[in-house]
Length: 548
Image 1 (cartoon, rainbow, N blue to C red):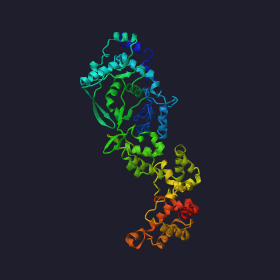
Image 2 (cartoon, rainbow, N blue to C red):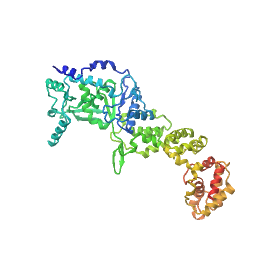
Image 3 (cartoon, rainbow, N blue to C red):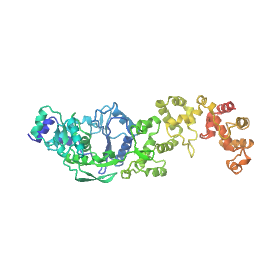
Image 4 (cartoon, one colour):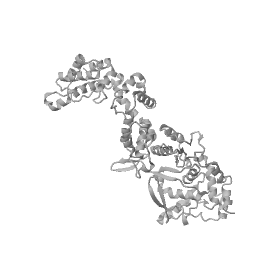
């Protein structure tokens, strides 16, 4: 019996690899087109890093008229969560990152290089594992978990490098006859790669982000097919990226140390290796140090966090692009109205070290984006969000005609308001505009510089009796506030007060603050004139009179 006979014994039904080489033809694309992918495992919530990676992959593929596809890597089925695949695609859809090729939650493939789910490609991996066995480049390993534990303990005691290699790879040198006897006796086994590498030799590699790096060769006889017949990640990704035509692998830099193994796999399988770009992790400031954004510690690591908080997807995408290419911020300032797709994204300009993930900065980006929305667009976004996440806000917004007026306050000017960074901010920003909600505010007014009740009453009475007219235009209204101030001994101009503070009780700003607090319960709001116009004559009078 020879290696070929052994391969047929282990995988009797596996096709020859030529079948798959003919089935998955080379892609007909422009010469420099990039084919890349996002390859998530459905083992938990979707991490914001997955959206980051997908954004980069889709951007570079689109820029070169290439292909961005998603492959579900579900060979670790013990860790798979219910609806894991659906969560992945829901997140990609939310951020307009749907791939060109993929498999949906019902296992329907969209594209000619599927199945795009590894658990459905079992026969493909077995065919390539069979070809390696037939060439003497892979072998069955009969070591039990207990055997491996004892081996590791011996290595630790001897203070030598752990792993299954060299003299420690005890199944590597079994004769074909010994292997056949063990298989016939019913012994359990896995398939290992017979590494040709040497740990004392170096390989040189150029990463598109990290630059030139070198590593020791891989000499570990890694597992390529597990006991359940499914492949390990290492083996599956090499077979899949070859057959699917991937020429650029974009992934987290936790995989950087696997490059020697992966290049070795491509070489031993007879494939051309893709280029690699290893993305630095997102970091978070914690005290004086930085650490990786954590699934366990940081709620913002979960993509669902942004949806629940109501942070617009455009803000998340713009912020992530800025993390990826720091020159985006300058470009955006120079091109405030341009589509983000016009930005010349360069993977070579990505940082080698991890970028600081700053929620404050993301919310600043979000404020800018929301400030550009007209009242109708803002209303539609907020109402859609509130239907799921805030019943009270949804009921407030059910009166669309009035709500459009409220949301339109100070929204169309040269300097539109920037007090909303997410949809969940809106309710608190507009509560005082709704009379039933204002009932909970009116009894807890906190006055500022002018806080004497008699003085406040004097201001309100005189304003109502002599100066209030809802039909006034904005300039007339403001002139009346100045006149009101002068009549009561306050400076009609702030600069006058600053020049001669001893002459006045205060200034026009103090008077308008009294009106603002009485009408809204707040000392800081958007334009007071516009607020009064939307509240209307009856409501303004009622609130002023009630305070008196």
